Length: 196
Ligand code: MN
Image (cartoon, rainbow, N blue to C red; front, side, top):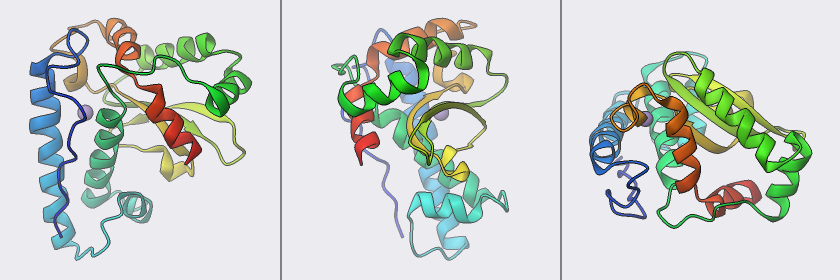
């Protein structure tokens, strides 16, 4: 079973000046490919025939196995790189916007809370916006490869807060990284994840 490295919708230098080509080379080309290669090896080792990432993550999360960790790394990076664009839709509309307003007050208050979550994150992991089973939205910080689907949340938006995501471009400046992040986040993708 071969899982292919998901293609980018943009060139590796297209997110500059917000994310450099060097960071993309390290983060997408080397690290993401490494996780995909590990995942392919592990699905053989674990004799996994169905490579549905969400199903594997849910099934193996309790055991905290290397297969769980690697499947989550692959899914997390798919969601991260898949939502970025050099020509993004810069603000959400429709159902997603009204649900953000209901959950956080306004898009501005949501971004403010999300920024605070990213900046206060200690260690490696990701900050997420997800939808709970009752339909409301929640911001969570998940350490390491953690993914909100293990809490039965639907992941909508991810900010990679591992140092490899920002340290080259924003050394010791996590606040600048998250403020740049909003300039390349394509809300059209987040709307599709929400409505799916
Ligand atoms: Mn990463």
